[in-house]
Image (cartoon, rainbow, N blue to C red; front, side, top):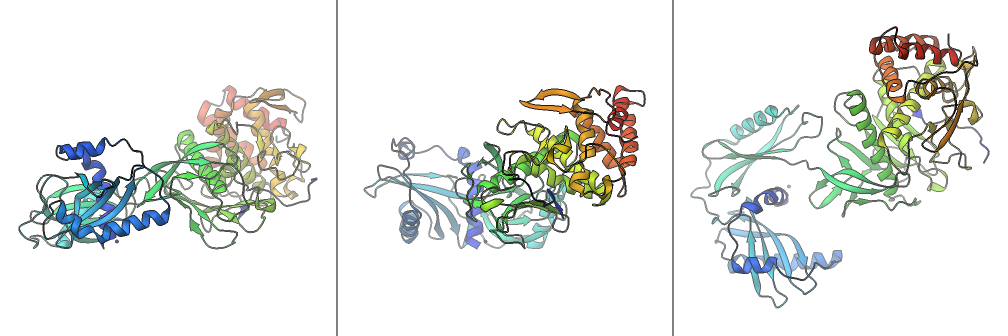
Length: 552
């Protein structure tokens, strides 16, 4: 377990599945439906806007519509073998109802058979919008190919798309009405992983008479939600729509999920879900169900994934396309955050009074980077290697903050400046002059290895600042810095982008579990030589920056 800082005193599915599948299909099929009748056209031009319904009112309308479903099916001309299953009801301000149905035929779900009935306040049907104009009817319900053959073909289709660990969850009989004349078919759902590590839920529809693949679609959906975070303002979040509920589940970044421990200290907790895809309020709350901390954590994980992917070409912490997960609301007034290899997850406490969550952007980047270190150099978490481990997380956490380019939390060389652990508005650590925190080392000495790793990290943090920005006084993104050197010599930085590349290559190519500061100098020089040449300005600046922190 790698905490953010050392504690010390500071001054201070049957029908249900059919409904889900049909809903997804109807979205794509609505535009290919038949020309609408005048009544249908008129229904689309009703001037009344939708009105908000309470949960109880919506439930009541759905129940009433389902009770009347048989009569509705007859009134709109469906056949004797067809039945309607209510999915949703929308009510306009003038009382008009728009009831969305899925269809079954002889008990089989009709994929692409969904429809909407528009009813005036008086009860008169104004029109029907259908996904397909074809009459739903098949000559036989007896398939000519086996379910096993359909499953095999579906798994093959998934593998063609790059799916790994593909397994079929059975093949069910359905009526496929998504294109042309309805036919008897099999629908097979293939699990496993997509080519980027995202969970797979490939739906393959196969003609039950010929074995021909009729349609396929991915059941794992991605949506874009809005996070009203505490530290980063209003941001976009990649979420997942499951039925009518949104999940804080990023299927585009290895399947990262954000869970609520609700002040517990063990287990995974419960996945955050929401009805409107707007997460948090922008303010902290001591409530164990507060979404704001979750929005910050999800945003931090999202930006960290993108930072590693777009800066170094690294696909996730293990570089295998699989995302970690985050847990928020850990413990009661827990003032820390930590990475844990055993669960491959990040955990955030809520801070003092449970109203100061440690979920800022650089903290998220810091914690995920412990996982990267664990899966590359594996720097031992004690002595000088432990200081290098902590510094690596500070360095890449800073990289994430600059990468995100968020106006509410501009990039800086301060660690944890947003979370106010000290209670006086000061950051947790400073990279330009680490000793300003009262405990960290600016320069190497023979006693550095005996310090807590959060303070021995100061030497590498100082090195990275000097390599990036150079020594002396300067202002960056509105923050003033004044970085000294051990030998009094001036250092001219090579820029943060190059400094990050050098540190990453050193970590992933030249550092080992026991690397100390002297070996880190060698590793970064080797990285600079490999990237820019042994006679380059970058190589020479790496040497100068280590000398400036007394690592010779």
